[in-house]
Length: 286
Image (tube, rainbow, N blue to C red):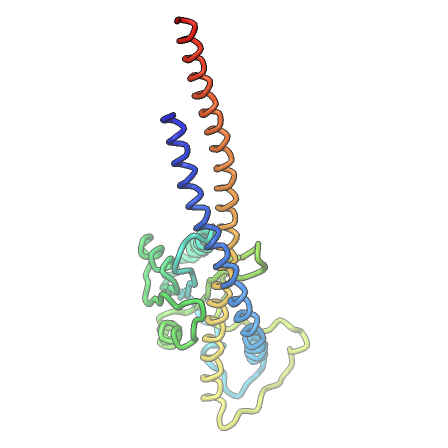
């Protein structure tokens, strides 16, 4: 029965793992609902900010902010949002594949790349591949505050103001639904004008007290809001991906337990048959 004993040990071990994955699945499901609530609550503000700033990029203002002016590109800044922990399927891998593809294109065009990393996985990934990480922030938690991100974002905004970078991108995983999370890279600076044909005429906002401080404050808040939205979208994607991954792990553990149980039953039956044969053989010999 040595073989059967080993199988019983394996079954017990897998059942223990299955309990852990089921617990993680339920925790992820609970966190996902809260993350979705935060994500949906922040979307209207981010969308309105996009709309206003896209209109500004299309307008003919009395003061044109540097964030609205395209310039020759020599160096690119990239803000990457990843997770702090693993066990969330291919979420980070898919994001990094998308980033690597874009980085290859930028390098072929002769652009240098600076990276700001949000999340332990992004920080480790870019350090491993030799990327130039100029700032990073980790362990933002499940309910991040925008104040935790401002410092790292300001590093990139200061670099753009000083002419050290000429474009700024944001990369994160967009939450589509529970089963689908899509990696994406959005251009933050220079701001892309709105393509709505109805806006292609001479117009502008009225600024109080002056256009320059209002535009500077608005566009800085715009960048911060988009980064925050990317972070909360990524958290919702993380919890959804972890829930699906843990459910898959629990199902696979159940299938493996059933297979091992069948093997155990066969081994036990073979051992019983052998014992009966030995008893019958011994009785016949007597």
